[in-house]
Image 1 (cartoon, helix red, strand yellow):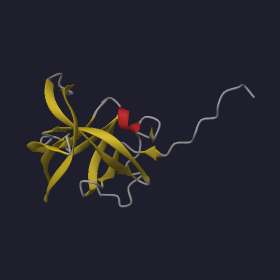
Image 2: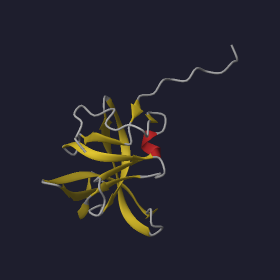
Image 3: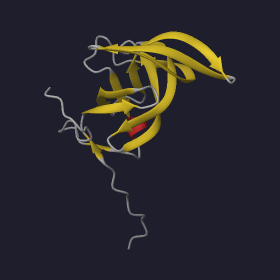
Image 4: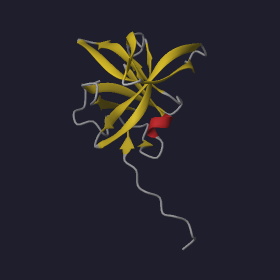
Length: 149
C-alpha cells in the first residue's frame, strides 16, 4: 500500500442531462454539463426581490419550450459573471437543491437570459466537483428518459 486514500467511485454524467430542481417544482430540465464554466446558470427572469424571516429571496420566471413556471429561492449573492463571449453581467445567484440522477445536493445558480442558448440550464464545475465525473462522449447517462436529440 502506498499510503494514499482510495478514491471514491463517482457516478458519470454525459455532456447533457435531464435534471430536477425539486424545491422549485421543475423536473426534466435539459442541462448542458460544462466543466469550462465555474458557475451554474438557469434561464430565468427576475421578477421581485423580497425578505422572508430576515433572509433575502428572489422570485423569478422560468420559461422554455411550452413550460412557464414561477419559482422562489434564497438569494445568496449578486455577482459579476463573465459569459462565454467575455462580457461581465451582474446576476442574481440563488441556492437550491439540484437532482442529477439519484444524487441530490444544494447548488448555486446565476439567473440569466439563456433564450439564445440551446439549453435552459448550464451545470458548471463547482456543482460537479467531488460528485460526478464527466464522460463527454455520451449524453443522458443519469437521465431516466432520454430525449431523441
